[in-house]
Length: 569
Image (tube, rainbow, N blue to C red; front, top):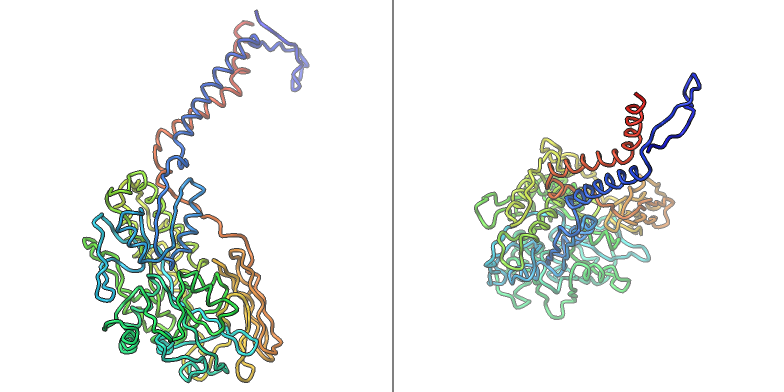
């Protein structure tokens, strides 16, 4: 039996009737079912070889640094779309190292390596295998809450000597001569200073006290003796507080930043990673560097500062990649921020429980991501991307994670904004020179260091206000200058739900606003090790599936025509 139909071909110049022979209806259906079933099997096999199924990633957990938590939490959010679950407790560097030591978490994050003596007691190294891996750089900033009259101060400057005297109880009022010398344009109030320190074991505290012990050891030791500590005081992760000193202690970076930003905390100042000041939309002080310029902990200033960092380059040492920052503190470059540093991830190098090969697979893919693509978000989050030498070293460290799917990452394709494909440190190279008004002396810049607007009042109307769009993002608002001032400065770039605030000078005619609004930082493209797994079989399955799909669509008509021609002969 054969079925036929008479049709007139629409493009037939002779208008002839054509008979198109087709397969019997039952045979056609069977043929299509067979091809469809085969194609479905191919597609199922293809899906099972897919790049990053949720089931292929085992959840991992970590704990530690609040200093770098904002960056790590953002990266974890970015990779969640690929089925990765990264659980992180931001409970402080000391607690994170302890949990890793006790085999409670898969990884830790800290600004302090193991083995550092704190008040004469060494922090013991864990029995499990481990290594340090840099994750992000940044600046420890001094966030403050100060007003002159009804106007918020947003352009405060502090020397290192003034900072140490504030955090050792020697300076107790904002109009102290030492602070006035740093701020010739501000008529500072006689308000009491409230130093806000960490109550928990903190890498941020360790960074501040390392700097004070290296640069101002006499003043730091004298304070420690008052607090009942032995001397030399050295570095500590637990800040000593003298009874009756007027200090207040808060838990975590969120705690100290939140307390300082409170309306009831006028006069407060704290030390905290720059990212938290951005999130709180509060100003930070410009810090005097070794060249005599006051600088902010921007991504570029941190990159310049870290050019003088000494890194343990002995790959055979367990302390490989730990940092010595003496050169950073004394960096003679006028663009450098003196309290610049970076944070470590403490990674496992063996399968001591709770670590498994499956967890190592997840941790390795996550590490490849944040060492390269993830660094693109560092400036918007209040950090500085890692320089090329630390990224290269970090990529070597990833290979030590048990279970990792090793990638041969080409540093030229790492997509890290710090360096170019030839290794040039672009952030440091392009960092602008500070303006003359930031030079220590009788002049003072009126530009704001705030993130949500506000204004400063100075003697003679030399005040300013501005807004910077932030909250884990940046975007500088237009600056409004003080009395008889003019507006200036470009509108801010898109940031994380962070419109730039309005700023106006005291009785000034210039008002600035920053359109720093935008969506949440989007996840950047992720190159995962699993993308390269099963490449040849994956390609073959893709081709096979494509062939079957084409066959299902065009196969029956072609076969029908072929059969029709053979029968007409």
